[in-house]
Every structure is written in structure tokens, then in C-alpha cells.
Amino acid sequence: MDWTVSLADARVRTGGKVAIQGNLDPSTLYASPEAIRREVRRALESYGPGPGHVFNLGHGLSPDMDPEHVRVLVDAVHEFSAH
Image 1 (cartoon, one colour):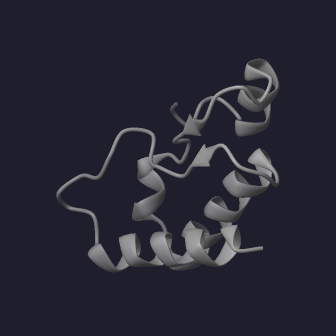
Image 2: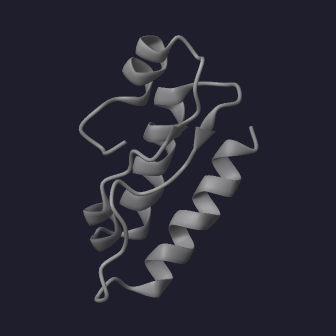
Image 3: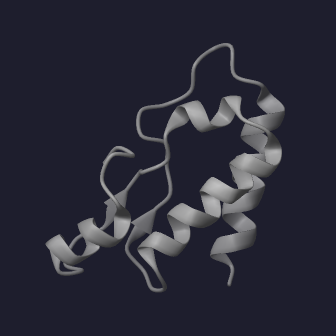
């Protein structure tokens, strides 16, 4: 799923019967590390607790994205989804 649909809405619409993958706008990786962390937290909080969410970008990486920003994204997903 892409970033134009909230995870909370998708979860309600599917009744929790299917896994949901995606939801972060890839352009977020052009932002500052703080903004990346904030958007990761927002996406995870939108889905809420429980199984059934595979964190992913809405459509993938662009070649000019900073690999350090990708690391910030991965680290933030691990940190925030551990709670």
C-alpha cells in the first residue's frame, strides 16, 4: 500500500484479516534524520499494536538517496516497533 492511505484506516477496512505492507512515502528519505524518525513513528503508531504489518516504503528507493538515511529508517523501525 502507498502512503496516501492511513494504516489505521486500512486496518479497519480489512478487519485485521490480512497483513498490510508499506505506507511510508519514499521522499521522506530526503528529509533530515529527525524527520525520518518522526515519520516512521507516525506510521507505526497509525497501525497500532499487534501483528499484521510489514513496514515498507510506498514504492522503493531512488538511486540518489543517502544510504545513511536508509540506515536511520531501518534503525527507527526496529526501535519503535520493539515497543
